[in-house]
View 1 (cartoon, rainbow, N blue to C red):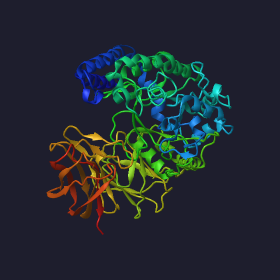
View 2 (tube, helix red, strand yellow):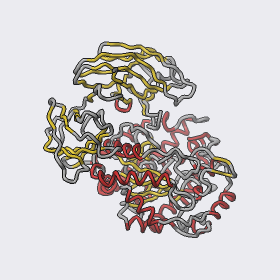
View 3 (cartoon, rainbow, N blue to C red):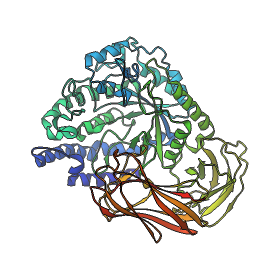
Length: 632
């Protein structure tokens, strides 16, 4: 059934692609635009047809079996480690801002000079068994490491190119052999990140425009992002890189190390046709290896990977259907940076893991080991704290599926085999926790941290709500887990319950009902968890919620707006209309908080709708959330 659904979804995407979603795939072209677009579509469509009617369709017959372990895992470790880890965000005595692993691009370092850095690389403190052990104790079920990042330097013993860790460093050692063995020892699935489309070392690959004047770089040469459509005569050069380095090295990784998963990124640097060719080579080499969703994807929801990838460094998750994975990092850089001290708390990351699982997703959490082979002390502390929580509460994560419950004001929930796991972020002070929207009866409630499973008292408040009597103190300060046992499937109601006992009831735009065509989601990073694309008056954003008792709330609307956003709107709550005007912000990603006044609400069901009254620019605004704060 899953395969049929996948093929149907793909067929829909292909239909859109066949109609020519040129605005998405072929924007900002010059010259004979129509002819080049048709040529590009024909090029890509040839590989799409070959895949869908042949090898890819065959591979999808074993898709569910291939991803069983990945769905069960829910939590993995991502590692960015390379010769860029040695300088750690510094070059020639200067701090280099941004991702530390992008050092070569940021500083426009020539290949020969970058190779001198490789000669100094000697991570004598590297211990594969320790790395795998730390991941295992943190509760991570799979580990993915950069076999080759955008700098083109292979962190394995490659026979394809001598630009690798064994042949060019003082260390002269292959860490991937050690890690593959260590992960197997500790029961962890093992895999590789491979930069297939970006390669700043190879003279034919996209990306290096400071030494080779190649397309795909910061200078936006040869038409910018769509260089392969604007200048198709350059494509054979990139195809040579794919044929001579990318595909052969990927085959090497599969043959030498037998990975469980392969992870790719930045597919837009190559045309879809080349990305599909790479995926075909992978499926020929190993039909059972899991492949992420950033290799072969295109317009019209086309994705030939085994699951979807959402945003980097997310703070919130936009709605996704099917299997998906997010990749936060402990600070801001993926590779090690000695200057990046912006480490997130273990509480934030545990709750991010719980929230991803509650929505049916995986969390692949990144760390950047230092150039000497050690984990940074701050990362160790975070992993240790997560491990303590996972040791007690992992049953609520592994093998869990998307919650059937509506959003709760105290946290989120996961489910597995007739059990609901309530992930309580805000432990009630009155010892009473209301599980809203649960129509099914439950047989038992207890703390997951209690080995004796001592029953918690509960009673039904209404046909939709159950009240639990819980201990005064939470079992931990990260996420206290309460187990509800009942009969699957759980029957629920979708309308959210708000309460004046909650300091702030947040209605995120990601969780709203979007009416009208054209809306798009932001990537979920801080200040970017917005809904965009608000271009006409037929579009509305709304939330429905319930109250059990009368309440008075202060309304606060949060949005961002750059020079492309301007206009007037109305916030409608029941019969009350509250007007507002968009204020353009100097910095587009800054968040504007607008006081929308106070409302008195009666018990029952209420609806908040935001609608455009007048759109004076390309769009109205990028809406993040509406908050309802109880007035004391």
